[in-house]
Image (cartoon, rainbow, N blue to C red):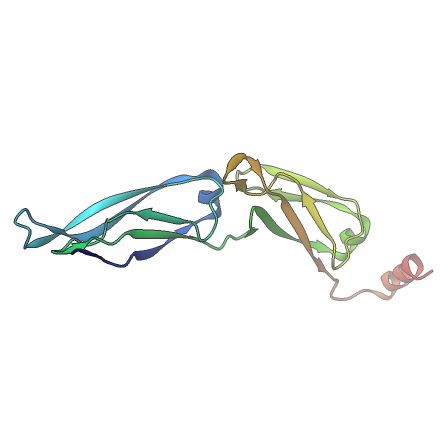
Length: 184
């Protein structure tokens, strides 16, 4: 009776852009293949093609049935690729949402401003911030997140958090202006 080898799992590292647009990845594997005599084997390379779909998440599993090593009296193992997200310089992903942290000087946090964000598809969003930005403040921009894998025409949200930059020092005159503006 033939016994099946346990699955072989490999990580597939993808950028947020790969997961945003979708892409095709070709992966070369080397595996033992039985010769026609059924006793001897040779190592042969094979290219496996993965069609990454927009919106796939970390942990998505892609299975290639019985693509592992061949041998007498065994059923080759399945090869399973597991999606892992590479770190991104601007965004962090949470489910279908993208998280962005904007750095704002204290003055702009108090009086408002516009924050420019370059999206994964290279558009420039101009997000007006008209509220006072306090430490727990966040802003949601609907439909500017990752594609939803079951319906890539729909997208999650862009969620903006803020890192408020305080001045290193203030002149006595500026301190007096702030005292008059904020404490009276």
